[in-house]
Length: 224
Image (cartoon, rainbow, N blue to C red; front, side, top):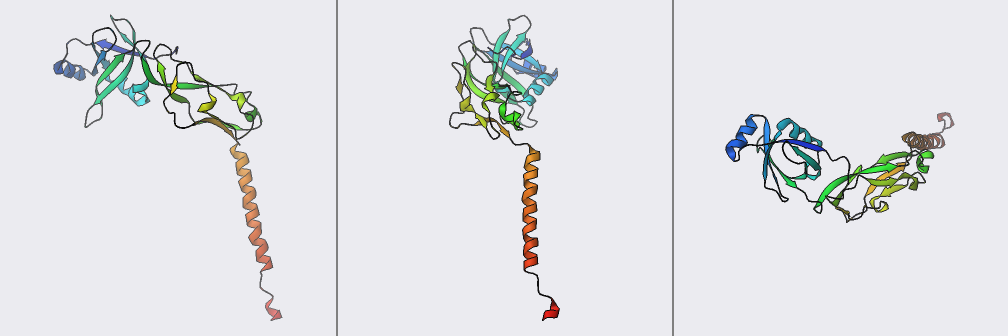
């Protein structure tokens, strides 16, 4: 299971209904509800600035959180909905779902690139380019992997690539994108070498017209 599940701090909200929700918003909070599992729904408030920052970071609805509410046990949750103001597009309410260990969820799992310093293709002067730093998987909440492992020792020559089919998925995990073998990273020639090659091509191209110009030069007018 992943060891760095981010915390999401919230406060228990007293009262329910539109009146309590409006009061929360006036106090700079975003009202929400935590549902699911074997417990009753729990009304909460989350500071507006905290939630907005999380939303701007992206992947909020596919990130597993450790919800911390004073007076309650920590619980793993995932966002199921964020309601927004139709004019300002700012969050006005959110729904969080408690997860059991057997619950299946979609999460973005980071890629761990190992043995990069010993990579044969890089040792030959190649430059590594990361195409995807994470991959979306369908996993169980009780068995979330820390990362997907990519062994850079597999890249032996400049131009070699790693695709998703080269990565061994954790037991029980499934790809969300199944219809194509997308690229994870590659090792290409450094830009300096590419520039030198382009310069050589440009020189050759310049020499050809010059030669043709001499061959096709008009004869001296004095010979006419």
